[in-house]
Length: 124
Image 1 (tube, one colour):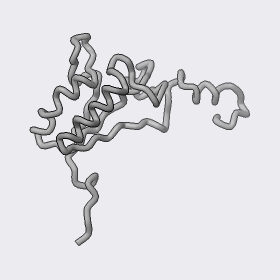
Image 2 (cartoon, one colour):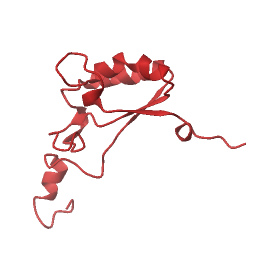
Image 3 (cartoon, helix red, strand yellow):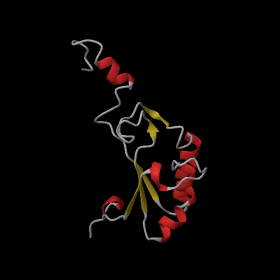
Image 4 (tube, one colour):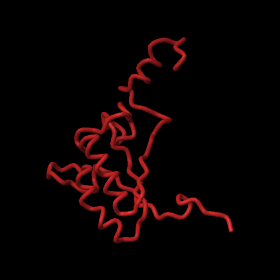
């Protein structure tokens, strides 16, 4: 009998950070808020969390216009918060998938700006 990869049989719960759970009462959901609800997600029977964009973004396209793929948007928390989220997810026997939007970026991203610098730019 062939082995079925985990990603073909898992149950996914997509989380949009901005609206999921606000831990500091500023009106914006955040990573700490997600951590505080992990037991709830697990109790519903989900095995994997799919985390929508949480990267630095000017928010012209609800976070899908990423300006910095290497950092967390300040309103959501810090890289340390994300590491804690990963650790807490794994501690519950769950998995986490980060939504990586590589096919488009913000017009504020250095890649985009460089591509617009000239008609002959190789990144164009």
